[in-house]
Image (cartoon, rainbow, N blue to C red; front, side, top):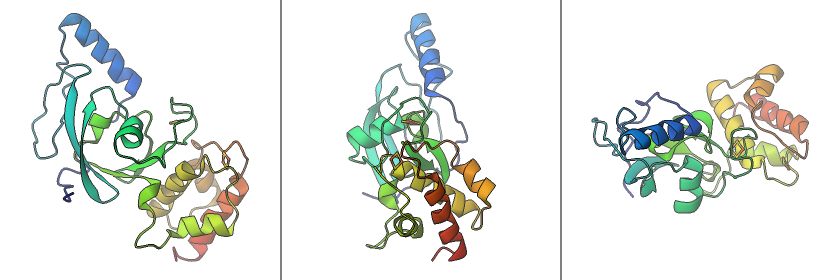
Length: 210
Ligand code: FES
Ligand code: FES
């Protein structure tokens, strides 16, 4: 797989899956095609491509540092694409409507709920999942800190928590307690490990990311 992030970060649009599907349905009812909601499907092209609702389109983006190509339906979410088509099952499917954070990944460095992002929104962009945290057989400092602070129980929320913590620490190496709480507000842990997760973030902050 070749590296290609030439268009990364140039698509600031963020819209909800529900909004897109609603718009797509309306467009189909009127004309059978998506007109104004045209989306880029190829990172090499700067021209938007008009796509039909529920059409299968080629898509290329960078996943954990590698360029990946996949064919997806226009209504597929990023989460479905990662889990069902790219063998990337770290992001979990739980609520499927943006309420729990179990599916959190980074899109151009920002934590997003992969269940609310359409795969086609990711054309030419950089996606990071928990699978990309380990580098060269070495765990990321936040992974080490989660183990040191016993910051997980069943582990179902953990991949999403880790990605939200990474996004926080990447933009703020020394977050306050309130900043950490804000950054993790969209991640729910049914086992109640929040206190240990906060301690894990503090551990990384105090160690300077080492
Ligand atoms: S599965 Fe995406 S927020 Fe819950
Ligand atoms: S460790 Fe079980 S949901 Fe968080």
